[in-house]
Image (cartoon, rainbow, N blue to C red):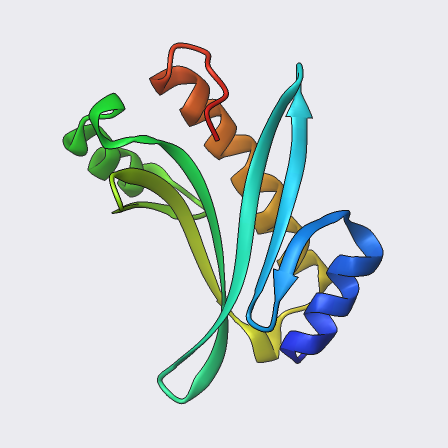
Length: 129
């Protein structure tokens, strides 16, 4: 895959898309035990190149200590935690021109599983996102 349109086509063929627009695709993953995790894939331009962002909510700011989040970031192999609008998100970025299906699938599945695990831990088992 080398373009955003090819990525969107692949996602449409592989997943049930909850919603999409020109620069975003919303996928809701079932992660077991009646739990779900929404991942938003977004296209953006940086350093004159086209990138994709994978973003999924984890918990509200008051549910996780900032120091815990920073320490978690130092150990993470896929994605990093960030905050926007009072919510912690697990975020991963990749260069679109070099993506192949595995490089798309691995972060999608890993972020869904890891974000749900963090969410469960920090929300006392609730599925808020």
